[in-house]
Amino acid sequence: LGAISFLKLPTPPPSKPPPGASKTSSTHPTTKPLPLGQTLENRAAAGSNPPLPKALIKKKGPIRGLSKVRLIINELIYTEEHYVKDLQTLCEIYVKPLHPKTGRDDAKNILTSDDHTILFANSNEMYLLHEKFLKDAFFKIKETVKNDAKEGDIKKAIQQMSDVFMLFAPKLKMYREFVGTYPERLSKLKQLNGSGKKGNKKWLSFCTKAKSLPQSRKLSLSSFLMMPVQRCPRYILML
Image (cartoon, rainbow, N blue to C red; front, side, top):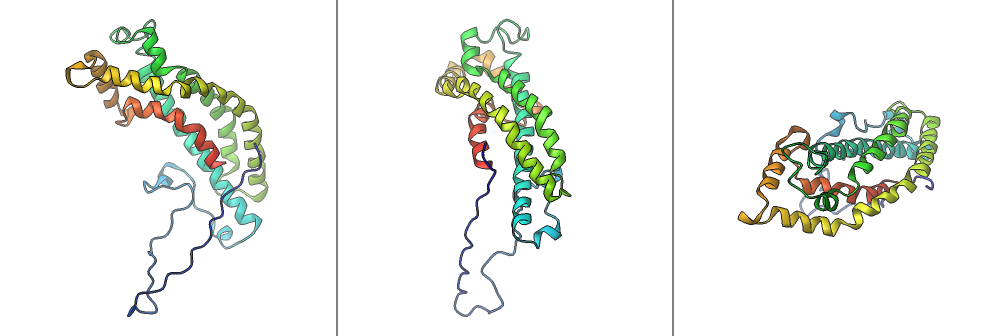
């Protein structure tokens, strides 16, 4: 992993006010822009990416740049936490109960071994990998990039993140098994879901109950199966 960098977008030229408009008025919205890492759902309430200290906002140069990097690292850790939770949900409410041999009594006969492999591949192994790195590495870095982090702390976090990905990135090759079989996975889902009376009734009943569980957040199985496909590209975008 090389040095972490961030994109500097050019400042757009000010737009000319329409004829007859007051000189003091502005065509730009007055809403303050969201800080990097925040969303419209106000993720600050979940402890994600607190705003920059005022002292740093006024500064320019390396300190200001490092503060942006701190937000990027916070964003990566925050999304990793939620990704691990979603992988855990996938495994606990779908992968394990539906396993033909070791699954739940009322669910283990719904899928054949081949169907289970096509649908879930090595999703449980991916969950275990990300859970390990989250606990062993990312949480330690999180302590270094708190809101009161100093310049030295942020530089230390950059080095820590680089070291983590030197170990972590080669293990992401396991995604080939999951991502490479995604078309077959979609085809199997379409077959099981069917349309009207053609779908597998036991399967549809199981998925409906699983989707209603609080930890699923009303997301469908197809939504959970899409998450691993999107995760590695997001590492590239953030780093």
